[in-house]
Amino acid sequence: MASGGDSWADQWGYNDERDDAPDAKKKGGSGGGTSSYKQKFGEGLGKTKSAASSGVKKVKEGTAVGINWIKDKYQKTTQKGK
Image 1: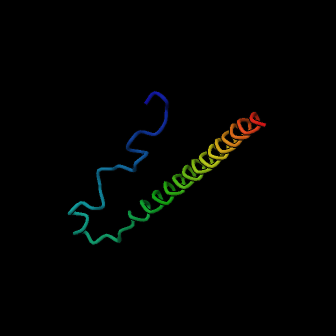
Image 2: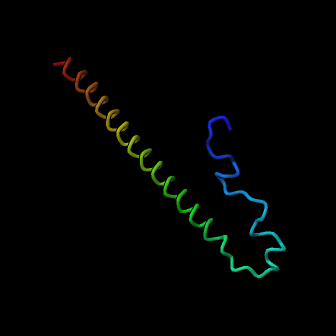
Image 3: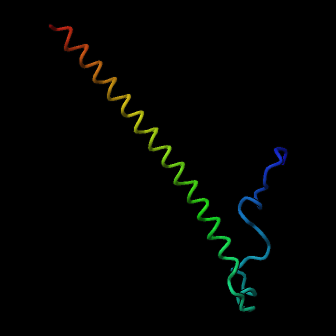
């Protein structure tokens, strides 16, 4: 990659020796590969929570600004009649 970042395979933890391959089950492995997936899943979940939290904050701020704008417009129209 031109940017020098991780490749697709690095980002997603892809390798040719998958844990769900039929011959891996025959070997009677301890399943140690699943812990790395759980760790990556947990990290991804943390990132998702963070993104969702910041999105909710932006929606709240936008809603507050919109409501205040509506209130100001309403007050201006009611004050004109007096």
